Length: 375
Ligand SMILES: Cc1ncc(COP(=O)(O)O)c(C=O)c1O
Image (cartoon, rainbow, N blue to C red):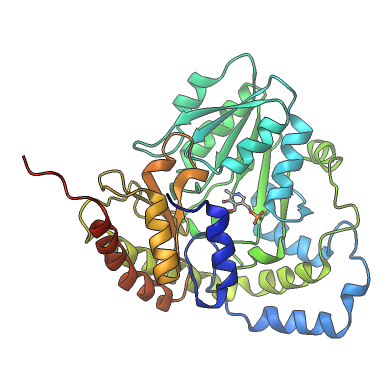
């Protein structure tokens, strides 16, 4: 039996300096100098002794607003997109409400929906085009529907939404008076990305984050955009009344100030890594990639035609090779037993590690699987 994934995380964190971290869609490619300089200065000034401005550093908020200019809205700052997602579901959902979502999906949001006494209606998207379509969303709308969850690009599959599909789904939200959560955490990795707020500004809650684009996942900075009245009703559920971590805001501001100078290279290297991973994985019989190329910095590797479970592959790579990929079970109710997810905003040396480890790990697993009995 394989170890529970909390054990995998405990092991990975205990050995973090040796781990090629391909398991959480984090970004290890952002040049650190500007962020380090800003943090050094803030620490020298002992900014951590005082509370931050409760509403967030105005310059950081200006930079985020500029980045999302097409929304025409003011960002709300929270401790990561996760907190914004929690506040949004808490504020807008009542027991009995339904949220149209997908499977696979980023299921943590589904859990927040459940906590409100509401439920998600999970459209099965583990088949082409591996994302929602306006047609299927429309067919799923019923009397209890209150919200649509549009994660674009989508964790874990890496699928992205064409502009016209975003528009069509946003128009459905508008026509049926539904809230639309548009989680765009991975937006910067996607070409020609469209924000739903452009098409349904009154219904859309845009979730933003600097965890993945700016490589600041550990600092927990993100938030939401919404039309003023809607934003006020969500902001009532803010528990971070005394503000988001002051050093995290300093780092986020430095990253956003410099983003235009490095983001293209981050995305280029990410895509080059993705292409290498495709070649490495497809060279081993039985493994397939449902979505390629990814519009984000992660992809799903389907293992269902092999004799190995996702957990066995995760554990072999982690414990024997210090390469951390993630079994799919926390990302899909129905299909979690069929895939592992790999992320790849990493230095090329981490991909070299994966290139060496993957075929060796699969050979080792093969030697453990009993050979089929001769007829
Ligand atoms: C779709 C999606 N939304 C939100 C988050 C969480 O973002 P944050 O680190 O800003 O809380 C993640 C993290 O993996 C994610 O995949």
